[in-house]
Image (tube, rainbow, N blue to C red; front, side, top):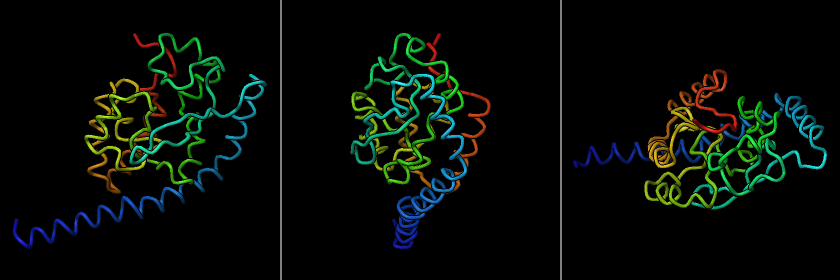
Amino acid sequence: MTKENQKINNQNIFKFQIYRDLIKRFFDFLFSIIAIIILAIPMITIAILIKKSSPNEPVLFKQTRIGKNNIPFTIYKFRTMVGTAPHQLSTEKFTHPEEYVTSLGQKLRRTSLDELPQLFNVIKGEMSIIGPRPLIPNETVVLKMRTELGANKVLPGITGLAQVNGRDDLIGTKKAQIDASYAQNVNILLDLIILMRTVVDVISGRGINGGKSKG
């Protein structure tokens, strides 16, 4: 590699790091604050409906997930399952997830409204709006693959490249490969494309099973 090419490569790496570590974080924080203000009434309404449907259960579902550099954190979601559901297990591992997901929970999952509390994870710096979805600690095979491919070098996201390329229809190893591709190519254009495709997917319900059994 010539000195000129090395200089250009170093400049590109610097721009990549500036966007990933500074600019992206600024927009994540700003977007989350604005979104929480705009969505405050819908979020309060959802919380009331959840509490009304099951007064003895919590409104929020809290679960340990693996974040950037494999550091654990607590993720927040609106609760969509009954209290007897396995806590540290992803829904896709359930034999009959519909036995645990509430009727309100199915609606929240289909519209992805159950993910809204994660805006507070973004404000705390534990997540980004866009990035690989954070995994549960016992998903060891996929976590190892993510680590080997470098997908754990960026903050996990509320939505991501894997989510707009199949979401619930993808197997874990395929998600890891897609997540690694995102981590290696983070840029503002890619993030905007993912954001727009997420909106389309949520409206159409593409790739979302809403807690129902597959097949």
